[in-house]
Image (cartoon, rainbow, N blue to C red; front, top):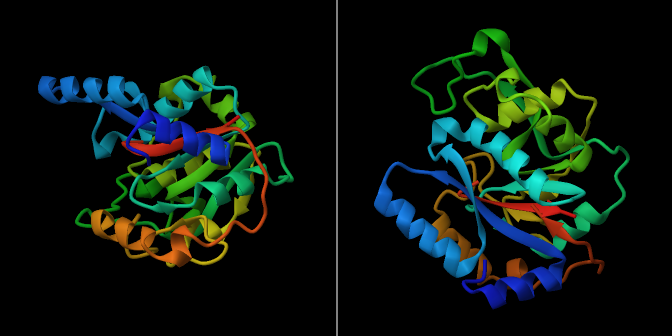
Length: 249
């Protein structure tokens, strides 16, 4: 992400994308003051009235979709973590493609065993509701919901949603309850840069890049990551938690 407003504007104009960081509140007054100062300086944040902590991520995700749906008239809303290597030009092309269903859930789809051991990171306390294997759902680092899907989410009361411990499982559960098309695209979860990769991260070892501060710079310095051409040229308008999010208008 560019570190100044002009750079952000140039990126958005060049790709047809708009970018915002989504972050919740903290009870630490000094941190909130610093954050508000940064928001005023760079104008690339959306602040949500929800506590910023990992256990609240499913709630933050729902708050994100509700907030951006109210602010932006978009075709797609994309949630992307800030510890993946992303090619915005290829993301715009992917979203601009014709999709077979107006209610689309786009991501790297997966299944797998439900984690029932409390000692594990992705332990699910509500595992008794899920059985032994998770239903089909997208990996959490990046996925997109079409506007029709988000429209259905925002009209429901917050307490009417089942909230699981993990955000990706929670979103997947909501999608199961809706008539959505699960669109699997592996370009969103490449382990290495390729001529068609949209997002690169250390799948499945980490939910993102394992050492993002170092790895992001290393990847960006590789020509195969930052300088390989986009295969087709087109343009769309797109805007999509402290993840980076985009919304396609």
